[in-house]
Image (cartoon, rainbow, N blue to C red):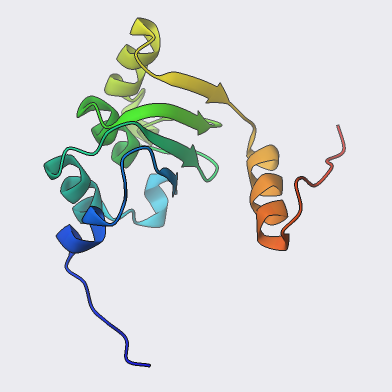
Length: 123
């Protein structure tokens, strides 16, 4: 089977409105070109899952009104402080915030990978 190559815009077009996207923290070299393509196509009602936290990429999508739900341990711009668009959206209740912890997010991802509903954690 031949591998196909897509442009970033073509890739963003395949992400439907309301999709659940797992986003890494900033230090994981996020694809800001994909973020820009989602904003350009005016994506709506995205559900962002921080793996386990998110940063600039999430803040851009929230500021562009592409996000309905955020599920994460944190949204931060690291040494630059709070993520301003996220903070504003939470204060205005314009996004749904599902608070989680780093271990819970990693356990949920591992459970999904194994095809099971959950993995218990020690408390």
